View 1 (cartoon, rainbow, N blue to C red):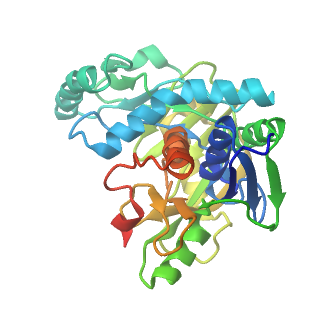
View 2 (cartoon, rainbow, N blue to C red):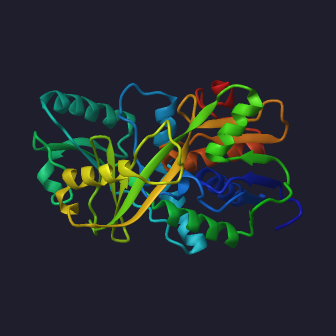
View 3 (cartoon, helix red, strand yellow):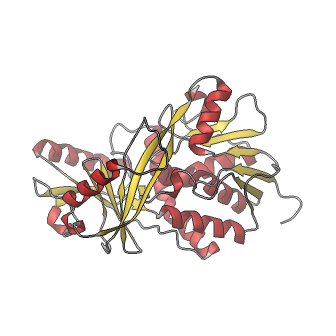
Length: 349
């Protein structure tokens, strides 16, 4: 890299930090990424990787931001795979959701009309026969499901490894532990970072929410992911299905699985009987960063010149990462602020 390139430090080796570092490197910055523990040590080291949209109604800045990010994802992950030579496990596989009664069918059909406009014809939300997706499908009392073609998946651990390989190929400096900072600093430090921010601002700006997930050995082929009864079932390209997750505001052991995960596994087997005999090959627990507004927390760190915050991915971090990376790099390298209202650091203070 030439001496005229800008310097940038990213603290945090989760999906936000890795995506921001990659976007900055693409823009010509000399990047140093510092991760205190290990890549994916927090919620980015789980299993599920569901990249799913909000319902297409009551449109707002958050939903538009997420839509734009989901539409960026295919190119984003294809470039990562090409540069670094590692497969991030991305696939725009769609999603199905069972409809329980006629009221839900009517609401889903109304949303299909909204999606046709709001999703700009680039994806569809439709009501279709559930039998179309057998055997990897949940029971539906009405015989129909919502099927959307915007939802996608990434394999979280593979995606993290792919971004690391890409950053290394681009000459970025990746440090596990600590190191001197170069240039402006973006803090993408997850749940521990939210706790430190709350202490720094002397008020709660967010909190960690524990989640548990499991990985089952089952090859669902090209089946779409399932969202049913508040549970995600996500088939991955390596012949596994991820299920999750719990949402625990109160917990004693942040990285320990327990009977709550056992209950999720049994629930998944009921919702999708083809998983009845699928072996559980991994169990995971971790803490997800939830900002006070529930939207990502982005922008300059008040009263700390040269420091910036990108936190609060919570349940939608992988889906939001391409757009979060773009707006944060635009802000830090160019001074261009495209952060929508509701996503700003100040919105959480």
